[in-house]
Length: 299
Ligand code: C2E
Ligand code: MG
Ligand code: MG
Image (cartoon, rainbow, N blue to C red):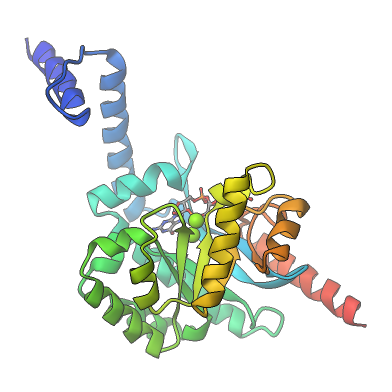
């Protein structure tokens, strides 16, 4: 009887999730989804305490091939399931609050890396972009946390870029602006990730002390085949220029996409055309190669 009631309950939740006042039959997939979700949550809790995470570094490039820095992307090496995509576990981490310790680890690790790179002439110019989720940014002491990490690691704040999404805008905009200004005063920059996919409210955009807009990869993907996406990409570049902001395109996979973007006035790129997200050692090797190529071009 318990099992039966549990299954009826799952069907009811499905009805509620589909807007209520509707009927759903139980189906074993519902149970599998819930069980999978609970297992992921349990494993994620363990992972945050163990050492199952690592950062990958994806090149950010200016012009033809000048490497300006990297975006750090979180990777979870699950003991049984192998590699789990952040697209799968970040939402769970957000719902459970685990994103707070996890996000802090990412920031700490990225800043320690910045400090290590600063000590070597071949990597000293590189910047690091860190994704910050809305929950993380909403914490009352977020600014103090970032400043403490910068202090402790000795990282140069001017080399740190925080990637925010429009989901932060559910909070009090004045508070958001104050937090951003406090960090900006120390040299930290802000980029607006996945731009164009959220509300893209122009009045907010004007008020936020941003440094850069990041054109979402969904527009870049079909920029050559879909005239609407091409128009959106061009409009975002013009918007950034008119607001005095920088602009970078993500998900650039082909020369043709890069050429289109360059022709529209966007000269900073990230995507498989330049490099996949790489483990630290491989990224550093790439940085060295870029340096060699550029110095031989100059010579
Ligand atoms: P995002 O910040 O928009 O990151 C870009 C995603 O696009 C990354 O997926 C990257 O691997 C992928 N990508 C890069 N170049 C290309 C390309 O040329 N083609 C295609 N098809 N994809 C490309 P990834 O690593 O799976 O991350 C997914 C999302 O997870 C990120 O989207 C970000 O929202 C979130 N995430 C990753 N790491 C962190 C983190 O440390 N903290 C937080 N809060 N979120 C993170
Ligand atoms: Mg990002
Ligand atoms: Mg993005």
